[in-house]
Amino acid sequence: MNPLNSDLGVYVVSGVFALVVFAVAMAVLVTRTAVDLTPGTVATFSVGFLLFVGVYFTAMAVYRGIESREDVK
Image 1 (cartoon, rainbow, N blue to C red):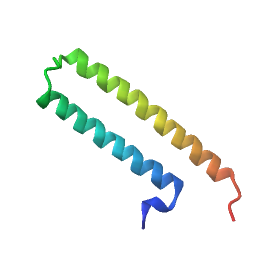
Image 2: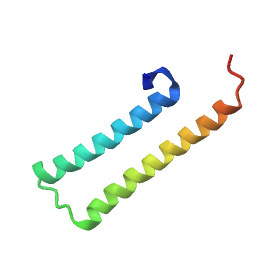
Image 3: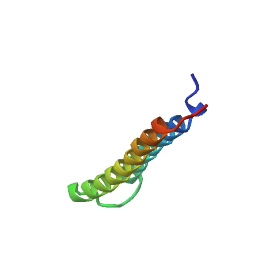
Image 4: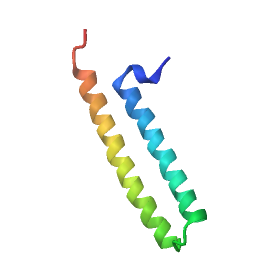
């Protein structure tokens, strides 16, 4: 089954991609820059990203609710 055959599949794949980009960006930030990653800095980045992901998944849930009520033929 190809996940890109439906809109929901595309949203899930792009959400996973966003998680991977965040993880790679944090790894690069830790290993390659002079940014001082104190626990507060990491928490701020993580909370911001989690807010983004929360909005993303909320939108996906709303989309699924709308899609389930539509009469698709």
